Image 1 (cartoon, rainbow, N blue to C red):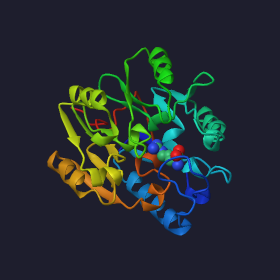
Image 2: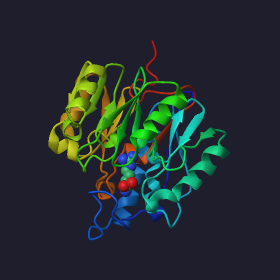
Image 3: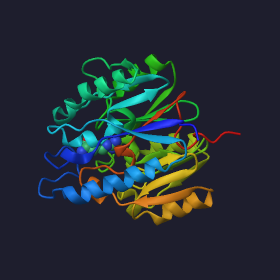
Length: 281
Ligand code: ARG
């Protein structure tokens, strides 16, 4: 089968809880390096099993424990990559490494202006007609306006109101042209209206599963890789014709991330809506 996307992952050799920059991270609750390595390998294997997908890797850096969360490194838009611009100094050192990797792979880099924060695919998702972006915990709303101008496309800003859901990819996943899943408690009334208007079939995940990062699933061509402990969302997907696999990401949830945070999808052509690709015909 031809490769229709590469998924960028970063080996967890230097992963750990070494600072606290979100509600999940607690220096008194360290990650177990061996368990984290095993979980990452399981996720990598599940991703490599997706049809038409190849896993590619970026070298981890000892001083950058969160570099495993490649989703924040950039946002892929049709041969261009909008570089991740991190709010916290703890992660700002990742940007040059991601930039060098993207440049070496031949992507045209677009860099957000100084002072605007935009945490890559972690805060911006593609829909069939435009983009939805989260603010203000990590990305700035002004960065969304800048992005809309650069792309010449609609970017709808939604406010993330619950500190547990500080990146948009922790609480929203697009599953098709008219289908998405969300953790409703992450949004205000306006945001929920936007999502209901945009998606005819909006799955509101159970709060307990939302908190296990149910929405932080990797969706590809009718196959979903979900964090463990989300059987209700998995069942909803199966009802809609998806196949699902669960991967334990408990060591990464300690840092505030799960399956999709650990993956950056780089389609071979065009810009892919995760749940649609490459369902042709
Ligand atoms: N500890 C990381 C941070 O707070 C986790 C990033 C999770 N990534 C994501 N795309 N949601 O920045």
